[in-house]
Image 1 (cartoon, rainbow, N blue to C red):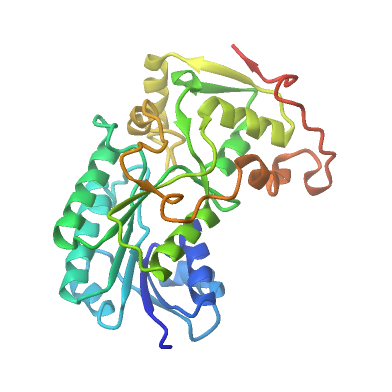
Image 2: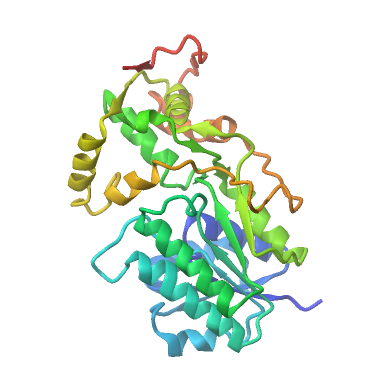
Length: 328
């Protein structure tokens, strides 16, 4: 059987690398488009055997050059997304609306079999978030130009390579207290990176056509519970302090000055809304690929890097009821 060709945008991130390994292992050939081949290729080329992966460089806004990548492609997968805007042109509108629309048009023009686009969970409710609005606009335009597209809406995606659990464990390891926005009551359904890429592979291999699929983990956890779990895993005691909204907005404004802000005002607005299945669309479980990995069990595998003594530390985990982590 002739190997199908997958064209991937955003292949150097945690999801992209995991997906490349899964696809190439199952006889799919992959072309990865990167904006900086010298900086990213050394990471990408180690994800598959020679002959199964091709790395090409292009500005994602160079339509003429990108068009050429579609000639031999059967499937296009877009994993590119940003959590905050940069002055270099990486705006929510450009990344989440304009670029995906271009890809949808090119998929249509080149008669591709599939277009899979990674969006985000909870964006229907977050009407005051620029991030959410750009994601929704992108979805609408994708389905307008390529109705057979599949849009995935994952909750928080985590793994050893993420910017979620690793960032929080670093901060919790260093600071004596941590702010709880909206009292830490926002709900999440964290999905492990491998469960998400299993879903993407399942959609491709089983030729599943569903417009929007919500990708969620096997459990619903509040933000406060996530922090407590992380503290337990790294064996730290910290004060978790509910943060009044005016102070939270002020701190977010200050963080926005940093090259990689901990939180922005737009992310603060997003945190008002739960990040769990809406019940309006099919989930990964509904299409036959339920999430198998639980948050505690997976994070435990790499949390030792934030414990005293690291890999050889004594694992003294406190029970939830006896935890010394205090909520003020």
